[in-house]
Image 1: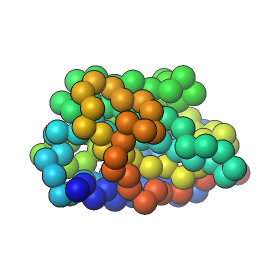
Image 2 (image 1 turned 90 degrees about the vertical axis):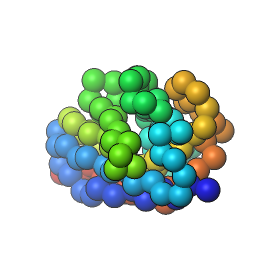
Image 3 (image 1 turned 45 degrees about the vertical axis):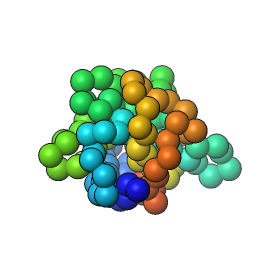
Image 4 (image 1 turned 30 degrees about the vertical axis):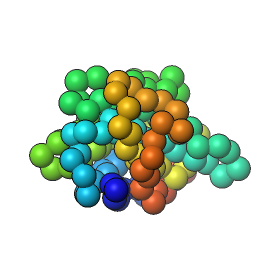
Length: 124
C-alpha cells in the first residue's frame, strides 16, 4: 500500500502561483508514475499531468500546459506541481496519485493510490 499526503493548497489571486507537494510512504516511490488530478465542484475528476518513475518525462493536460510543471525528488519520496498564472477555472481540489503502469498513465483508472486532496481556490 502507498500513502499519499498533499499539501500547499490555498487561496491566491488570479495570475498568482502555488506549489503543491505530495509525500509518499509505504512502498518504493521510484516504482510509481505520479500523477496530479483535480476535481471542481459538480465536475468529474480530470487529469492535470503525470511524471514518469525516473522523472525523465512529463505529460500535461492542454489546459495547464505551459503554466504547470511537475517534478519529483525520489530520495525524498516527494512529487511537486508548480502552478503559475493561475486562473479562476483552476479552482479545484487537487489530488496526487500513484500508478504502477509504465510510461505516462493519464486515466483515473490507471491509478490505485490517491491522496486526500488539497483545495486550491483562485479568486480576487
